[in-house]
Length: 281
Length: 227
Image 1 (cartoon, one colour):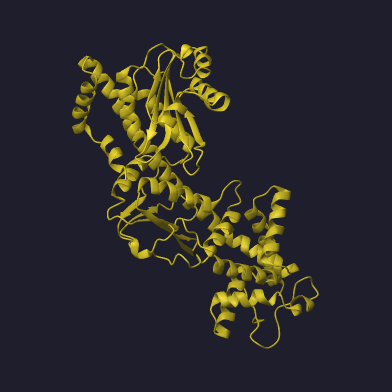
Image 2 (tube, rainbow over the protein chains, first blue to last red):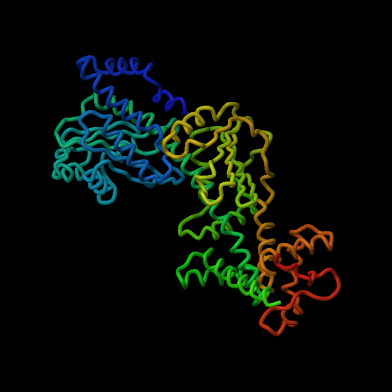
């Protein structure tokens, strides 16, 4: 269980001093002013993870926000992307992609859809941070590097989103300049990616739980009218419940109207007739 | 995850009712289980308790080879009614996660409540730890959907015969009372009548099917009037 990692990142101001000291320890050569500025950026990025699961529950939006927080947290970043893997499949299919800027989306398209090669794939497969400061001549990705270099993007930092037992995805951070991401940036990136992995995964658990309950509630709300329509159709023309349901579905598809709306219409018509008949007698 | 045949059938029926391309409630359930297991290694299963428009549905799906006695910790998430259905403020939905290790959900509960935040509209989610150590529903038992469906289909039959929904409910109740059976059984009787030739053979001549007839506990023919 990994909740502790995430909780440690949303401590209040009291822990921020320790946090600044941690960052200063990471890079002893850094001026205290720069360390402080980096710490503030990282803290802002991590704080953004709070309230990550909004009312919209949209995974794409959630990941886009994480990408933006990453771009904010890592010094020198011009943009960032988050890739999420589908964990219930053995081939680690990509479940979702999100980017903080359009150029990141273009690069991810090249990486995943066109070439199936690049830093995020390496970071994910090897479960380690990878970076390059000169993508145009990068030997690790001989097709990806030059192509992205021609787009004017020369630096990348890829951070796997690691949980204790597996990798759930990766964060790609890009910069247009050369050699932008040094050891300090990589260390800050790792400080961000560890809780981000937990946050993204837990957010998924919560979003799925909410999704399940909404699905169940919607289904249970519409089931009574569908069943009443099934009973009505069976009473009129006989047949099984399955046959009546198939007829409802056929009407729904033919008219391009939701099943529940078709059922409601059928029941409403019958009820209208029943009330009229009651008034007559 | 061990989803019983009865539960699988209920989830398939609910998915059909959802009528959303690509949606599969059973798949959503499996995904929650898989992801929760990554977050909480000793995860054992889940229960859902749903009350919508006065209809209650409960089901449990445990991991394979799990016995209810193995449960040592739980996390109940109670969702605020305005999240799933603003039109049904009385709706209540609880998702209960189970695990084998005591205190297993402490970290996850803290993280989830933090992730939900206060400003995202989800702040009213209730997280309750370790108060649901007994499975609220036999994993092998049906969820209750079939019973609800049978009653609603019977009401549909009665509406088709000329009853208003209120009259249909009263007639169903009357049949149950008069014959000393419960409502689901009475609904079964009404639906079983559909298979009898006399049901349609004795049409009323006005396009409506005839009411059930004859001795032997068939439907009461007196239909309560609307007030």
